Amino acid sequence: MDNVINGKQITWVNSTRGLADASTLGFPPGVLPESIQVRSHRTGRVVEFILKSVIRDQGIYISLNLAQPVDVTVFDD
Image 1 (cartoon, rainbow, N blue to C red):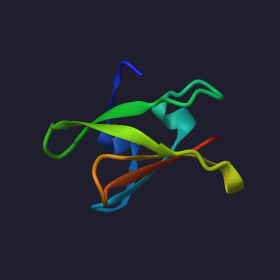
Image 2: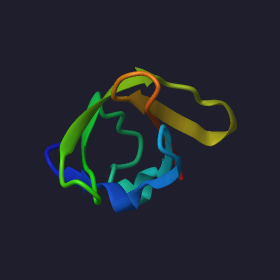
Image 3: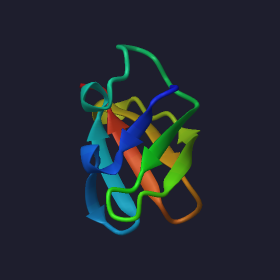
Image 4: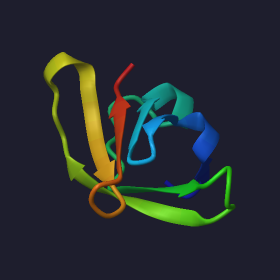
């Protein structure tokens, strides 16, 4: 994905865990990005999250991480 995602589009459960819907992030249906870039809405810093795993149970689409323990899970909605 070429666009940088605004960190506000991710629901941050805490400082190390974020959740988002694929449609909110603009992912086309069925497309698995190998990475996403997220701009912090607090610091302005852009960080790249790398694909960690794909879990299709219960609608979980992908899990991406920056560096343990920061994770973002994207649900295929």
